[in-house]
Picture (cartoon, rainbow, N blue to C red):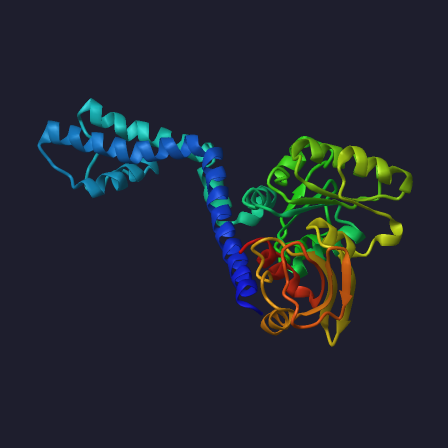
Length: 362
């Protein structure tokens, strides 16, 4: 793999690790927002209350208690343990702490501090919230709507190519299917894709494409129009049983590709999702290989290099070059690739993402 392609792979892997870390902190913030009142009262009681108790004790008795002991003393009062080596004080303002702190403790526990601790260490107890928190950190990802037989194959194909995927479905999935999506690191958003809130939760405003694969033409058309309203630059790929709608979808909704029942191969959906036409996919000795078209962009890692150099450096084969409407099959290795050329590449399936990344960015 060439230097630019390898750099793209490293960048994508680093971005994924960073995104999961950010998602962890984002989910923790969501927890804090949910439980902020009891947490706020708890910390004010043990720290501010402890400081006040220490100052009042110093004022009445001239005793200075180390500041680091005061929060622990308030915590003991809160759980009805009292203060070690001290009975209930005679001073009314100190006695008030002995009766007030247990009441605060009951309030904090009643409002969910125990639930907060349990949920914080068991994220699976609130899986849906965690999935939404993770999806909120995705950028330039692909949303797959409808995780049925076709949708799952599309997700697998996209993940095999290395692309980030967020899934969206209105029905609860089986435990096996949900576990597979988690193993593929694809957040699942439960909701009706025809509603704006569900698409927003899936990050449609930040996505590069939406692949709609449900078995209902009406749902697919509705989701396509809703997604287009939310993101004018979105690539839309729609599964359509009735071919009469195809031209209308492309003309009025700006759908990039409408794939019929005869074109339901997952690579076709996956390729259309990020603007690459995948012509053929085959497997040799458990290794998937793909033939796909690519338009060379300015600043591409291929621009200004000969075909021989590109093939040797990146372990790929360029089997066709189209330039100025002239096509050369099995092109000469001395041809220098230019921006705007359309090339047909034969490469390992797992290389597709890195090649596209390196083609898009210098």
